[in-house]
Length: 254
Image (cartoon, rainbow, N blue to C red):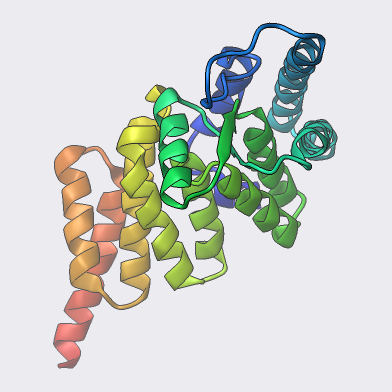
């Protein structure tokens, strides 16, 4: 079941990158940075501990121990749920400065107070979804991935994996909507090492949904676009061949 979500080899490397490269906490965007105080210092220490747990969970997931991975992710999730449960502001998790800023703009457009924090919390939900898929817990995986999406609604990788889940359920409208959102946000909000893959996978997903829902011309156009960008795109070539065959069958019938 994990293979359904493993759309690229980036999932584990990206999990490690988040765990290793993110600071303990990104500055909240409201006002100037506050001077150090005991509470903040305790939170920073806790954030570092959560990053270590994220690394441990990702390693467990990589080595085929999903239950152990979930145990680590659940500790992270519980920590941040407790920390922010009484906050009146909307809490977002941003993986890049651009993503963080976008959430503040989104909140302002909705006349909503918001803060942005480091992505550890959202990533824990995201990777927990993989582990749950590995254990064939589809409802749990969907709930975890949707929670990751709620915390980071512009994160392209979260959106792509959630769309893949909707695709596995044959929920074509929701899959298409989510792939399209991933495509929209890939250029601006992908991690550098994931940008090209995110854009490609979003395009693949959109075309697949079009193919499955009878929009063969639209699917054909996207696959041709993918091959124009990358002639070595074996998936796009395979699916384009399928679409061409389907169109030929339709023409023969008519």
